[in-house]
Image (cartoon, rainbow, N blue to C red):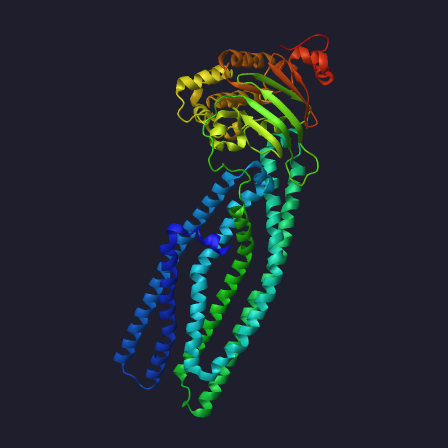
Length: 580
């Protein structure tokens, strides 16, 4: 885990190395100051003249200034290294998430990934900065101070051999109990973020059903869970500070008592006042170093679980990958399903799709009907290889989709999903997701085919109109038509509309289908719809039921042979008022 995280230091190696080097200089000078001060005290006691005192004073000022400069530089380099490390870590995490398949995304919830990219990275960043700065300073200070105190105080320094083990045992017990608690806290953070995400995303639904109070209570419950767990952990970690202070006060009382006794009993022969002052200062430094180490210990305890969660994402390999020698050209838009079965989880007993055999010729228009949960969307997701089949094969242009370069395949299979997504930016910027190099003329043509040009030009800003995040300032039907136009700009060999005209009126739906039929004769078109009128003029209609193709044929053939299709058609046309 540490090796994986260290790989994110990269261009920040120089600052990462300079931080402890300057910290070494700060500690060395700071630990020498008490010894010089002790010499000064002894010199004053022995009746030193002003010149000697000023000389000692100048040395102390220079050393203090040098220590301060080293500390400032160390802090500056630590901040730079920490920020750079966090930037690289976020980049690597985001890049890994972008490479994930839908199956990988299903493993991690969206809210969990957001927490790992934000809160967890911040915790690891703080721990990293502590490790290269404070975690270097405290042990160095501890070693320097112990060596100097042994040199100055001899057997008196044995006091530290008693207090340090007590502290070590206490910290170990705290860590052992705290780690499982932090693991539970981070999971509840994911639940909290999930509550926020769902609420913000569904704000219109929440307000239309007047469920604000319910959502507040739900969020308060998730927040209370986090608070309770954090309170328990903080109560446990709070023992750390009193434990440190106890050790500190024991040393602060024991050292003056023992050294005073030695000075009085020996008349200052074995230890003088300067040595006593120096020893007390070193004792404070030792105990403060231990105090800082305990703070580092707390931070590392918190960040340890965060680091594990981050590395879990970095270590997850995408379930889909390009073959060693991928096919880089899609010859045509023909589609073949051969004995295809699929389930989302390999451990699941039931298949989402079972025994699917299908041939679609290039340029055909295919309608797909079926009830909710009949696996219509699952079927089309296999074509663009958003998932891999569990059994059998799916071929596009006569080639197994697993043999294609995924980018090449997906550029030739344009999918307008059931949940339309627009991004904040102008209409032009959203359309150019389909083709970054698209000209204004190409965008206008695509929008005319999608029946979007008229409502775009009706607005004063036209194609430069700004779209709010998620397309909040356009209607559902307008959003669908913009998404269709965006897909058309890809100039795909296969166009899939996953219930993508459900929010437009029947007349506009008919105009879109007419434009496709006349303007895109060579493009294979798959249309998932709830309305029979949207697919009845298709070359082939599939009737899906419970993960299988229950029937297939033209409109007239299915009226004769499929009871399911006939019932749907009859219920929608009621008395012959058929939508065309």
